[in-house]
Amino acid sequence: MRRAIALTLAGVFLYGCEEARSAPAEVKLDTVVEKADTPNMTDEAVIRFSDILAQYQALNTRLENVAARLQMTNATLCPVTVRDAGFTVHTLTDYPERLQQVARGLLSVDESLSVRTVREGSTAARAGLRAGDKLIGVNGQRFVSGATQQKFYERAITSAFVNPSARLTVARMDASGEQTVMSFKLKPETICGYPAHVVFDEYVNGHTDGRAVWITSELMRTVEDDVNLALIVAHEMAHAMASHLELNPSDEARKVLELQADSMALVMLSRAGFDIERAIGYWSRADNPQRLSQSRSDTHPNITQRLNNFERAKAAIDITLRAGEPLDFEILPEPVL
Ligand SMILES: [Zn+2]
Image (cartoon, rainbow, N blue to C red):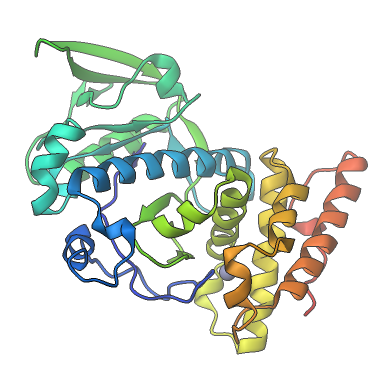
């Protein structure tokens, strides 16, 4: 269970990973739409409202699937965990006013809470929950409607999902407009509590505010391979997990934190069954869009430093796996610049 987030835009951060020092500013998707009138805007922003929403849904689904793999397999390494059943919810008010009419038709969303996405392979998917299902209640407790519905829903779900199983009741509308009330037995699981969201932005960037991870639509567009997307998501999760945002490091210390996040990310990828060799390979490729700008950055390690660090982390991971020992952050060598 994770709520759909407001469509936020993070302002201008550095190309490549840059941890936001505070929660991203709430700039609605309207801004993207307004910017579409300006001549120097990317194609991304020039698309019609419905395309934006369809893209938003598709990008979020891809990101949620990649992030979920990391969140499920690394729960024991995460200081913050949540109980999750593999679906997200939304209401019409999650969308900018100008997009609500389109959202209503395209995403079958209205003023009441409904299912936005159902993650592949999750307990919700196995039980048969579908996007568009309207939420009625959990364990016999009915959700309220109106202004406080989301808070009420979150509290009810959180307390129900503490248990090994919970019964979720929804209404599903068929093609003729007929509503059927259905009930699903879900078996929530404990996962890392750092959800990942897409933010519409023309910059290639990933960042974290310490609670959630934000990946820009442009970064997702340039990263075709899910392994590489996983590395970026895990890197941002690592910053949040290690509380890097609470530090106020010098530029040099900051570079060490970047390397530390890289090494931690590699451990998380390995635990999630991703091919870490392939993930490292992406960084050594000349066409990596993040390479060029990082080589100019004062606050980020250069590509050689990052690759060396990846190789050292990978060596430690390989030794641990060969020895059949548990893979955690303890096995990582101290990062060196
Ligand atoms: Zn970083």
